[in-house]
Length: 178
Image (cartoon, rainbow, N blue to C red; front, side, top):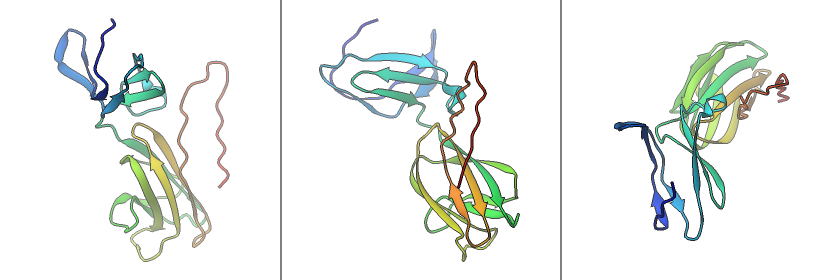
């Protein structure tokens, strides 16, 4: 169905077929430029996103629209050599705890806000000692692995984005060298 719109900022509301009261997704604002033809495709991004539904927009560039209320997800794994519990903070002043007391070699899940952030690792309950820091730009809907490694006092924090797509004919292996 072709339709035209004036250039400008728009927000996409996706509703259940035949039931406009059931809103499935409300996107953040996005821009439509003059002289550009756009296509919108509804997809299930569940393989590599925490968003239950998404819309791929193709025009002069490709973009994925997801619900504005969807955050990102962190999988925190404490692989520190001393096996002591660690706290992970999502801000520079250590006031926003992402994970408290992450036990050794255990996966802990936490919601992440989107945006550029500094993540810090401290011994559990001790904000006076920052053992590792990493700055990352978090994208809503993505899944990240926060891997804490190294010796006490010399820890490293890696924050790669997970690629959770399924490969039909191959196994997927992931190696982290931090």
